[in-house]
Image (cartoon, rainbow over the protein chains, first blue to last red):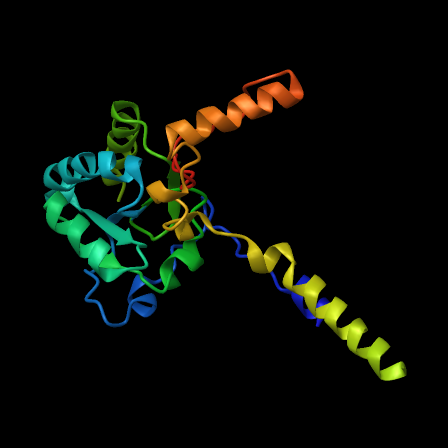
Length: 154
Length: 75
C-alpha cells in the first residue's frame, strides 16, 4: 500500500511546448467551440480568487478585439459549488465561452500552479505561453503582444 | 499478543500512508474553502491583539506572524 502511494505520480503540470489536452473529451457535456486552426486562450479562474475578478475585463477586451481575427478565449471556472460559479458569471457579464469544471477534470490535466493561470495556445494546438497570476495592465500588455504574434502566424 | 502487534503494524502503516504528501496536498484550484473570510488569521482584531500581546509578554518579541488575506494563494 505504501509502495502504491509513493509510486502514484503527482499531477504533471502542462508546460510550454506541449499539446493542449482536448477540451471536448474532458467536458463532454459542454459544447466546446471549434478550436482547430485557432489561437486559443484558456483561463482558469474561481469566484473566490481576487485577481481572477480583476482579469475578467481584460479577457473581455481581448475577446472583443481578436475574436474575428481567430482568437478563442475560454474560461474554466473551478468553483466547487455551482451557485458560486453562476453568481460570479452573472455578475461579470461574460461575453466569451466559459465552462464549469466542478469535478476538476480539466484542471487536473492542465494543473495550473496558481489562480488565475492562463494558457495561450497557437493554431497547431501547442501551448506557447503560460501566465501565472494576473498583474493588471502589465499582464494585459503581454497577452496582447503574444496573441498578436500568434495570430500573425499561419 | 501476536495479533495485536499485527493490528498495530497495520494501523501505523495506514496512518503513515494517509499522511503522504501526495494525498493531502491541496491544489491551487481547490483552495475555495481556505480563501473564505472565516479562515483569515485576523478575523477578530481584538483576539488578534490579545494573542499578540500574550506572545510578546512570553517571548519578549513580536511580529512576523502576518499573512496577506486568506489561504487562496492567488497570484
